[in-house]
Length: 50
Image 1 (cartoon, helix red, strand yellow):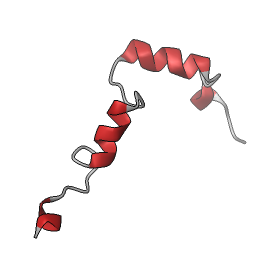
Image 2 (cartoon, one colour; image 1 turned 30 degrees about the vertical axis):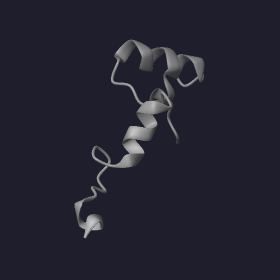
Image 3 (cartoon, helix red, strand yellow; image 1 turned 30 degrees about the horizontal axis):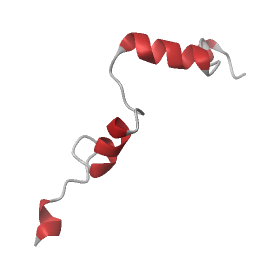
Image 4 (tube, one colour; image 1 turned 60 degrees about the horizontal axis):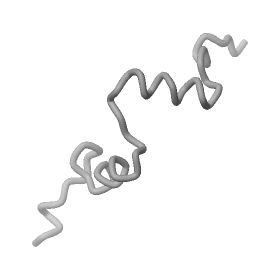
């Protein structure tokens, strides 16, 4: 009965809430940019594979 009420989509799942609690989710463009640069991934999609 309770299982039918649980959401398994990304936005409604417990997983999403846990990501927010752990600071692994943000919609802040500046925070995302800083994290991308920190991980050395800036320009990653500009690289040609072949």
